[in-house]
Structure formats: structure tokens, C-alpha cells
Length: 201
Image (cartoon, rainbow, N blue to C red):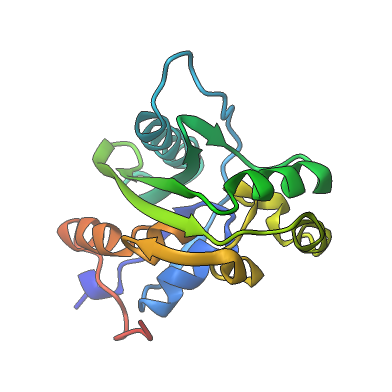
């Protein structure tokens, strides 16, 4: 029973990741990491998101007691081998959304589970393919003006108004949102962390 009540730390300030874990029945604390998120030369998207996830978890591990379980994440949107990060402003968000419109891109989300003071425990990456419907410049600009896409990789939120532009998702929707739920639940279970209730999803 003690293991069932074990908490962990989400090493992410993302509200969408917090909602997914809460809906799945978990209890946890949240500490946002502060790291350099620069991509190294020649680094593939799937390698980059796993490295970032691990570095985020490691950074927070320095701020919590030994043995604490931490979960770090990172998401990248890839269109024709080009990684699209978070837009700097509304103009870039508009341009980014228009570049995705009418095309299919891949979303990679990496995760890393770490025990503070003990190091690596588990990590992985999941990918989903997303097809966007055609979007005109006025629609894209109106969406950018809402502010929703400004802190989202690829400049859209599947869990928000951005879903209006998505015509098809191949793979897990939770991966597109930023947390591959099936993989994460498995990693937490193997580490002795179980939901405190059945959850809503």
C-alpha cells in the first residue's frame, strides 16, 4: 500500500502534461527545470527529445531528496526533416502553422524517468503522425493572436483550439500533446509508482 501512495516529481511546467497525469490518477509535485535546450549539430529529433527529457529530469534531481522519482519530457514537431520549436511571436506562429497546413508532420515526445541521487531509470521516445487540413492566412493569424500556440512546439495545441486544424492523427494523441501516456504509465509501474485512483482516462 505504501508504494501505491508514492509520489513523484514532474520535471515540467507544462499544464497539458500535468492534466494528463492527473486524469490518469497520479499524485505528484511539479518543479520546472531550467536548462539549455540547444540542439547539437546533426542530432536527430528522436535523439534530441530523449536527451532533453533526461537533462530536465537530471536538473530537477539536484533540487530534491535522494530517491525521489522524477519525470522529464520534451516534444519536437518535425516537418520534412526540419524541427519546429516554439514560435518566438505571433508572426512566427502564423508562418509555422501555414507551413504545416495541408501536410503531414511527425511529433516526437521523449521521456526520462530518474531517481535522484541514483541516476537513470528508464527513457524512451514515441512518435505520432499528424495531418493538417488546409489553413488560410487569416485563420492562422487569428489563432496566433489567441496566444495559445506561443508556448507549443509547432505552434498548435491538439488539446486546445489547435485541434480545429488537425484532420488526422496516426498514433497516440497523448504523444502529440506532450506525454506518451502508455509508455509513461509502464515506466512508472516498473518503478513502483501506481495511480492513487482509477483516473478519468
